[in-house]
Picture 1 (cartoon, rainbow, N blue to C red):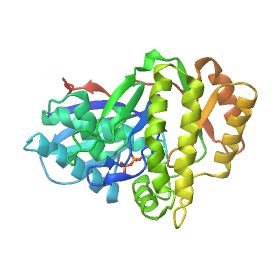
Picture 2 (picture 1 turned 60 degrees about the vertical axis):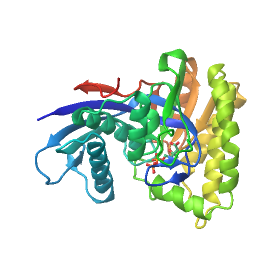
Picture 3 (picture 1 turned 45 degrees about the vertical axis):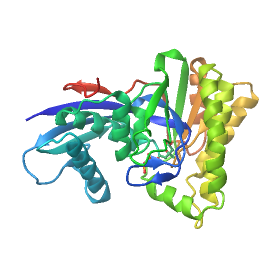
Picture 4 (picture 1 turned 180 degrees about the vertical axis):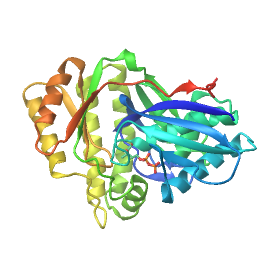
Length: 332
Ligand code: DP6
């Protein structure tokens, strides 16, 4: 039986993907830009299964059911179809961090599964094309194909062939660090997929969110090229708060922050008042990710760890793109 194993890192968006122009292909309403995180990884083993019987998806050793299983199964089938692969594909996934809690687990998981499944099915694609395949599983997975800083384009085409990610700066090209303050390990109440749709439909601020994105992307791209942490951090904070403000204005509102999330934001601002370059961002969950220079990481992690309600802090740095652990890489 053919098998392949791939490992991908989660990524944190500094200019965020929020809203879709096509939910079936996960085509985004806006472009986005992220940094891949070295210590938050998902590993996927994909095998050609000779029977149609479930489970096609296990996570940390347990079969997954419900919507998550149906979503994974149709994703595997889609890769099989593209490769004109005769058998069915099944996957076993393991993540080394809490899943479904706003830590971009779907990005790491779908990116790893896309790579291992493409390998087993015999697809040969460019890395950019692979990011387009991963995107169909979960939008943010498109960016985890690349290490360091990556940008995923909105694209204009209906088939999504131009909505793929590209690398901006490799992980070793800028000495930054990220401290992740874990505030809750619980699964989020509303999946980002559903929240995005609800917010796009009901938030009066959604239009403004879309209109501001191009400028944030251009400024973030420039800040990365110039290795300007303060500029990049300011853009990331503004973009994050604009996304969450758009969510708060939805009817009914979508609130991802907990008390400790707000306290961690205040701790970051206090660090800045003391002259330290530290900037937060928050995705569809309560965790706070803080971008800083590598030499300030211990100070930032200690400050976050002292915030009441912060359970633990993961210290990490920009990480690599997806890699094969077993089997042939599907990219050329
Ligand atoms: C807030 O990629 O999880 O983290 O495409 O529906 O699977 P789907 O959504 P997903 O959304 C991530 C949203 C975000 C921002 C970001 O990662 O850019």
